[in-house]
Every structure is written in structure tokens, then in C-alpha cells.
Image (cartoon, rainbow, N blue to C red):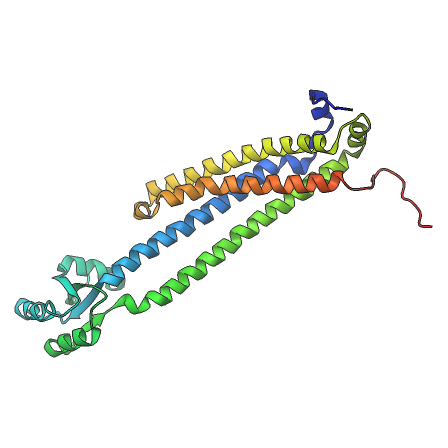
Length: 293
């Protein structure tokens, strides 16, 4: 017969009576926040690398001796600007140079600062010709081209991203397993009520709907908590760590919001599978075991 959905049926099969199930909201908030912040960190790292890569692809630094005169530097500029691939160049202000070396020598160092020429280049630059021209005029000069490091840095970034992705997948699997076990243990703990509901006509589809509604209510609450906590974390980082602001893009905010939603989908799928598997089991844990013939 058709079984009507009424409050008494919902009360009879209440997974909230199980202590572990009541922790679902807290698990969703904590694991959802961890996953969201991990995804946000992934996209932030991608943006940091992207901006750094664009800068390193187009700039070369030439380090000259501290006693280099403006006339010598101008001669070098005139010699380099005609090389194919060189677009522009400018000497760095000595205050900027002091800021660059301060982490190594301190701000109050009395050592003479090198002269640094920042050269903007394009992919057509011939490094051999460029280096030869620099050495011809400044034999002791050093040419710093970080473009050779791009492949190494790219591999390191991809490795870190892969590790973070595996950690996020592990969090999803852990939460899915916890939900599946929680639903299964909750139903087994209420086997008597479940048998009564089945006896008076409740179908597996109806019971599964009751279970999923309860899981959805708690998972949605946990999802909202995780989203709020992730958003608050990004806001706090933006306020107290200003250098991070350029790297907190729309993708980072989307990750902070989208990952808890994805986690909720995983939770619902795990609950659906666990409820279905438990309800379709062909045994009753309260019934006496049949002896083997």
C-alpha cells in the first residue's frame, strides 16, 4: 500500500539519535573548510607562478660594479638597445637596490651597492650576443636570466599542486566513508523501528528519502558553515597580509565557495549508496542467526 509521509514516520526513523551522525555538521564544516582553503591555495599558487613567469620571461638583470659611472652605463645601454630582442632598459634606483639586498646585508649596511640594469626583452633575444656585448664593455658584470629556472619552478609548482589535489581527494574520501558508515550504523541501531516501518508498508524508496532528507539538512548546514569560514579566512588574510591581495582572484573565491558544495554532493552520494545498500540487505541483525544445515 502507499505509505504517507508524516512527522511520525520522520520521528520514528531519526538518525539524529545517533551520536556520530550529530557530528556530521562539525565534520562538514572542518573538512569543507580544509578542502576549500586547499583549493584556494592551489589557485593562488597558480596565479603567483603565472605572474612570476610573465615577469621572468620578459626581464633580465645586469649587475655592474659599484664604481660604474653613468657614462659607462649609458654606453652599455646604447650597445644593448640595438640587439634584436631587447625592448627597453632602465637602471634601478640605488634605494631600490638597497631594498633588494637588505634581507642579506641589512638596511644599515655601508657596503657599496652594485649598479643594476633592468632589461626588458622578448623571446627573440639571442643570449650569446647579449652576453658577449655586456662582457665586452663590463668584463666583471653578471647577467641574471631567471628564464632558465622556469622549467624547474614549473615542475615544483605542479608537484605541490598535485600533492594538494591528492590531499583534497583524501579528505573527500574520508568524509564519504564517514557518512556511509554513519548512515549504516544509524540504521542498524534503529533496526527495530525500521522493521516496523517496513511492516506497515514503507518502501525502500520512501525510507531512503527519509534518510537523505536528514543527511541533506545537516550537510547543508555544514556546507554553509564551511563556506562562511572559508570566506572569512580569505578576508582575514587580505586584511592582515596585503601582499596576498593581487593573488586572491575570482577563481580563488569560487574555490572557497564551490568546494564545500562539491563536498556536499559527495556526502549525498555516499549517503544514497549506504542507505540503499543497507535497506536492500537480506538479513535482520535482530533476528536469530540461521544455523547451517
